[in-house]
Image (tube, rainbow, N blue to C red; front, top):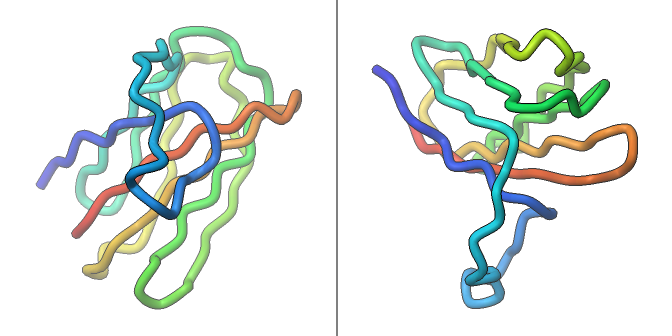
Length: 101
């Protein structure tokens, strides 16, 4: 099963009405497949901290990835639930995405 994940710039927003309506080019693409998140970086963002949280259980995985090579793989739980991805750069830029299994 593959799931395309939309990555947004900024921190996760709790209230959907507060989401910005402007289209911002995000240099990260991501999709989930069989227990792994696959990231593609369209530009070098440096070292990144990536956290993946199961919003139903609170279980969180944190890893560091170097975006220089252009691609990265992160193994994540395959258990069902709602997940949130948060990505933070060395310069404190933030990106996020969500997916449901």
